[in-house]
Amino acid sequence: MARLRTILMSISIMLITAIVVGGGVFLWQQTLQKSKSAEYEDQINTIQASRDQAKAEAKAASDAAATKTTPETTTAPVILYTGDGAAALTPAVKTEFTTKLTDPYVAYYAQDGQVPVVSILITVPTKKGDPYKVFAIRKTDGKYENFSYSKLGSPLETWKPTCGTTACSFSDSYKTKYPDVVK
Image (cartoon, rainbow, N blue to C red; front, side, top):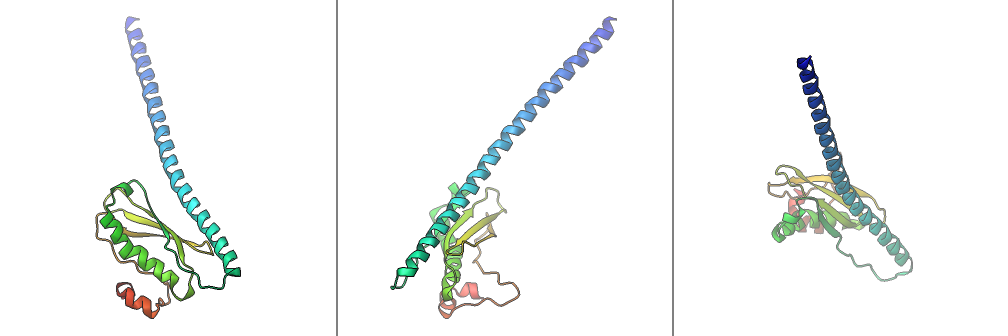
């Protein structure tokens, strides 16, 4: 009888321990999930704010274009770096992003009356080998494009447009200014 009590007591203690440990693991996972959800929500809010700003600027430009007689000047797009790795970007790396990605990208969509780019959001990863994620919004039509670009820890590549089955169209001035893109 004493042995049966000892066995039942041991089983009860193991069961209670399993319940406590399982509950702790469950609560830990819920906390982790909430923190990731908040991170993604912040990124979505940043993108939505950028898109809303682009729409507002497009409407203002459209309204101004109806009454304006002088040519419009081009403004540079808003460039945002986000993600866990963004804080580690040096000014030299940001300059390289400008030279190899944002300047050729913006110039490509501004040539020959195409829709100019209003904002570019670059999500910087923390793990070497993971790609940068780029989200760009264009003026007036509010259309956007997202794509992966180069990889953390590798030299940045020169951006090149994806033109599908047709050949990309480049103006003469674009060909002169960005010969690496045209190659």
